[in-house]
Every structure is written in C-alpha cells, then in structure tokens.
Image 1 (cartoon, helix red, strand yellow):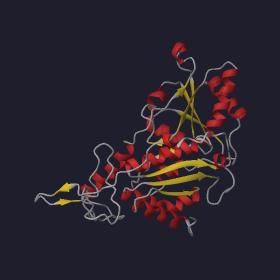
Image 2 (spheres, helix red, strand yellow):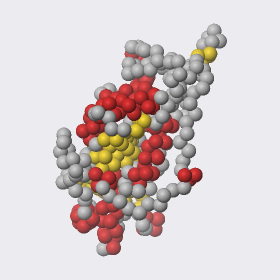
Image 3 (cartoon, one colour):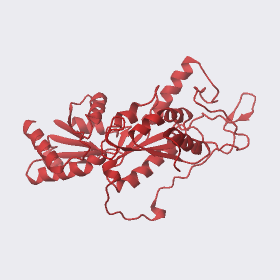
Image 4 (tube, rainbow, N blue to C red):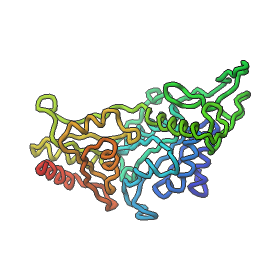
Length: 338
C-alpha cells in the first residue's frame, strides 16, 4: 500500500514483520535517509525486513528519473550506532527476481533487515525471462517459536527472545499473542538472552559484537571469476570488478577487448555485505584491479579498506549507464599502462 510518507511505510513494514510476515519496503536514496532510524530499530529488534533501494541521481532530489549507484555507502553505514545490515545487489532486470529471493532468504534465516540495491537503469530495463515453476523456488517458510526455550535455576520454563541459534546467531521469532511467549522488545539495548532493558557496558559491547558477527556470518557463495585461459596461461594481469547494473556494460566491454586479442578477467559482486569469502584471495591474484562504478568510487573504497588492495576506480555520475565502447577504451588503457 502507499503510505503517507517514507517513515510510515517502513514502520508498517516492520510492524508486519513483528506480526510474523516478511515486511518489504521500497524507495530510492532520499527515502532510505528517512527510513534509516527504523532500519536501525529493525537491527535492534532483530526482525526480518527487506529494504529495496532503486537508486537514482542525487544528492537530495537530484535527478529523480535518472540512474546512479551512489547509495552503497549509505546502505553500509547510513545509520546511527553500529547497525550492520546485509546488502545484496541485482545485476540485470531478470536478476532482480533471483536477488530478491536471495535477500529474503538472508532476512528470514538471520532475522535481520537486508538491503536489496537496484537502480533506475534496471528498473526501466527489460529482458526475456522464463517464469519459474513454483515448485522450483526456494522454501522460505519459517519455523516460529511455539514454546518456552529456556529453563531457569528453579526449573521454571520461560521464553527468552534473544536466545540464539548457535549456527546463524538468529534469535527466535515469536508471533505476538502466542500463549506463554510474551516478551519485551524495543529500540533500547537488550540484555543478552532475556531481552530485558540493559545499560550494562559489558552487555552492550557483547550485543553490538554479536549483531556484527551475525551479519559477518551470513552464508554467501564465493565469487566466480571469468578468466579464459587462466588454467593454461596463468591469470590475466587485469581484473575488472563490478557490482549492480554495471554488469551489462562491463560484460560487453570485456568481450570487445578479448575480441581485439587482449586478456582481461571479470568478476561481479552480488553480495556486498558480507563480501564473498574468497574475494581477498581473488583480488590479490591480479596485478591490477579496475572498478567501474556510477559513483565516485564507493566499492573501490570498501575494497581498498577491507583487503588493502590498490583497486583503481573508473567512475561517472552522469545519470546514464556506461557505454560498452567507453569501458572497452578504459580497459585497453588499463592494460597498456599496467
């Protein structure tokens, strides 16, 4: 439904999650700014929530009908306090469906808000898509808490809302009104396990680190590298690393460069937080890493900070996607000057 404003929209979505549904809210960059406090609340409540950001030109109202991918750092850090959130990015119009399922899987499995990043280029794009059989889709059903999960010293059985799954660190999800599972949640810091309000310094440090560990532990696949001839000739000297809607122009540019006889490797990120477990090893395997982005180098900044790799940015913020010829020229120059 169309709420009266962005804050109301995400409040309703988070309320739906509190009630046992998967809340979903969609917006663009300015709306993410307005939703940021409630996203932080969802981090504290540890409830699943899907925030879909169809990025556009900014800042402020910027160019509302034009494309950009400049909200990555906002998705990563645009909240007060330590409020980590997984981030998934779609690469093509068809991939928007698969990426949405992936984001929903993470939100439901790990009890966390998740960002799904798209942009105006994908939103206005199209490509053939085979409608999947329903039976082939992943089972996203959740087992809600039904009974007490903790025994006190005196033998009393109680429900602890922040008693965690040892594998995922997800807390139990109890639908309001379930007999015997009454519990307190809210934005103020919780005591580990019981969920009671706590101002204890050691407990706050523990909860902050636990929420971070939960996001760091989200299971994402290793990144795959397209590097023809790597087995026989060794890796190419140049790796092009992309994310989001740059997939199409990057892929077309890489094909052009290869047809011209030059070697170049390509990798594309779907998961931006946490990053794929093998990304550091992949990046260190190439002499040069080039990161084309429709911003001023946000992924490059994250990659450099995380892996201490000298990733080089190639950027534009014109409200338009890259052109294949433009990127091909940039790749050839990088190879020549590498």
